[in-house]
Image (cartoon, rainbow, N blue to C red):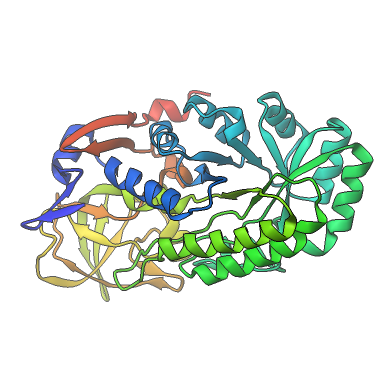
Length: 410
């Protein structure tokens, strides 16, 4: 993203020009940013036997997934739909890990039918899978009792988490696997999302490495993802090279103790895609209330739910007057809910110092590439936006805009 004389350019294309061509609201992704973030993460880990699997729940657009495949990534999928998308994007079954959570027998069957490795999340599912598919190779998800993330809703490790088999229950894992002849080829963890401190990641990694020697025949250890990006202007970016160096050194040391080299796996979701994506919308109404100046738009939390769900901060730009003099304003959506406000925190509405918006202006919401479209909905019976990929001044449509007819076609 560049600002030239106050005008926001995405992939070299002015924001308004994109809206005029593809309609509003609109998701826009910069290909160079996507490739750059993926490449720097892959290259930061110098351990040779590695697999960087993109956690595609962050964004399942097949065009974007195909680009990440070209950059050497595999896929972490958490549903049959994501397995389907990964195969459509050209990933091979052996590049995909299905990390289940309270999976049904039908979901497990689908993964096995597609020759995808299944990562089992509970002793209950381990028992179910063993009865259905004795003698299979599997992975198991361990809860290391360490959690972290930008909001308590996204912490996926620790005592209060629904995810994984507690690290103290290894005996039960091994006994169930023995009973059904299951071959545990991998162990896995994931502690949370939006982590900007590599020490938290390494701390959880060390807990899993303490458990790992109990599993004698594993070929890989998957430390999950959760690597964050700076959403606020004053946040410091994680030192990716230092992160890569720390986990490489930790894993090299472990493999020496274990007696053979294993494959190191991580699963970034947010990191490759978040900063590549933007949500563009038009200002449809301006309202001066008793305490706030509301800037109404033609999008809402049906298209980007993170502010309403987590109180998440997203930088907001005036797409044609980004450097203009600012005043306190609240940017709101068009959904019939009081929580449909983009400038908010966990406690409610927060004024944002922004250049003066008037009707017809273009709003640019930044860092919307992760958990934007993938968490969108048709609430209020509103269609979802189109998605566009931009590079070098050129744009191409990578998902059509929904129509009202699409909402009721089933």
